[in-house]
Image (cartoon, rainbow, N blue to C red; front, side, top):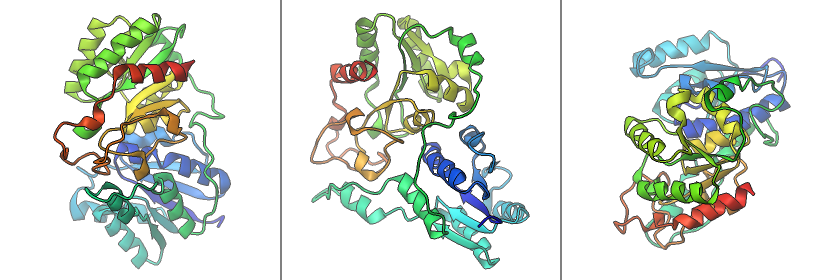
Amino acid sequence: MNSEHILIIRLSAIGDVAMTVPVVYSLARNYPSLRISVLSRPYARPFFSGIGDNVEFIGVDLKKEYAGIKGLNKLYNLLKSKNFTVVADMHDILRTKYLRMRFRLSGKKVAAIDKHRKGKRLLTRKNNKVMQQQSSSFDNYKEVLTKLGYTFDIEFNSIFEGRKINFNSIYENFGEKKSKWIGIAPFANHQGKIYPIERMKKVISILSERIPDVRVFLFGGGKSEMNIFNQWQNEFPCVTNASAILGGIENELLLMNKLDLMLSMDSANSHIASLVGTKVISIWGATHPYAGFKSWNMKDENIIQNTLSCRPCSVYGNKKCIRGDYECLNIDENRIVDKIIESIN
């Protein structure tokens, strides 16, 4: 396979793209002569920069330059010019199905992800749930590559492993690290995955009391999130709105690497922090780790969740609460703080 050039496609979402990294990293290490190109949205470039001399990243804007069927044809012609010999579709949506079809018709070997939807349906149905661990996204991604003839074990610690990384920008913004640094990413795409904001504020308050010299860095992106972060920053001297200062994933990865711990929902920041080897504690509400979306190397003991007969009600947390009260997220603040302190000590 030394002459092969593989195209790996995973266009979104950011957490799912992040979960491809340990797999791509391991593929690159096990097949150093294989040329690997990863096709995704431009924001994902920092995930793949420097993880292997044989790995390149192709960032594409699917809303502008490559929008619609005309844009996909343009994208296919661009990709065709790179002479890929095999294509791994790790997304399996309409756009990638179309690209996959074009490559197959041109005689290229292609394979697509099996998302094992049946098991997830049984896990999340309203009655008679089948509470069984589903294959992880990491295993599902690896399975695509196995179909194409690449066999390997996933071995990964950090995208920074073996690299000289310049952390000057972190120290310039936040000073030298002289205490415990904890990251908190309190938001997610859906309400069923977000611990109540006022209760998260209480978590920060308790943390500041129990760890007097703690520094808390907040991670998030939306305008409404920034407003809340700024309020907390003004109220608690230990809190810093990190995302407002860092301005992008590349610098956020650097700061996350210096954290003692990241507290996150079942969300992208859980996966991003895991890429730099940072310990993650995650809070789960409507979703469940059994669906296969735990971040890399996450230990079950660092998962905070309530056991309810209605849980999980969805794979992604995007369905309306069956009970109407989100009891799944009724988690005592001290329970969260206790777990944080236990983990960092």
